[in-house]
Image (cartoon, rainbow, N blue to C red):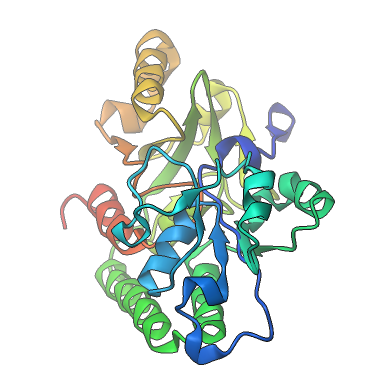
Length: 294
């Protein structure tokens, strides 16, 4: 069966959001919310939202179709996560530029060649995000805000753990769709982390990558109780693609999840490719999908 799988690392193609920051050790910590003093550029939506929750101002933000926090209205847009405008970023004279670890491989050389010392925030899981929030909070004198954010995540996780203590773990297949194709999200992916925290058993666990591709026959053999369909970029087009695939490919009707109407489309605003401030709401929604009986 393993031979039917081929691993594909698609961190770049699946990732929507990235950010960047660069710290100046000479900055006075008590002036850390002065954007001119910090001169921080964030290049992803997820990091931008984290910085907003920490009440930290920015001088540069990512270009995105998503609505960014009101705090950053009028702030210079520096391009997309995968293709930031390096000339524009350098013109802002940032002290810190933030991106994320999932696309470090693609951006590290680009930033290095431009002599930009980027920071790659690890948002692979809620736990890693919590560590990063605490670290950034300490760096920019926002420890109280950071501790409150992390406390909320920990409280929600504990609440979910108590609710699933006596429940049987459903088997879950996660499909990550991009326009024209889809892959399988393993337990190493962020959505896989959410499934694990809500007590679900990812039918593709123990793999070495976040995403992999497989034919539908092998997927059907995994016999999931639930199928989660996540959309990356152009969500309406991706949902239409999934609907067409499930309708025209006859094999899907043999999946128990399809027979029992346990196929769910995930809201991209809550279920991105990296952890985000929306994780608390995402856990609640996922719990309702995995345990509709409550």
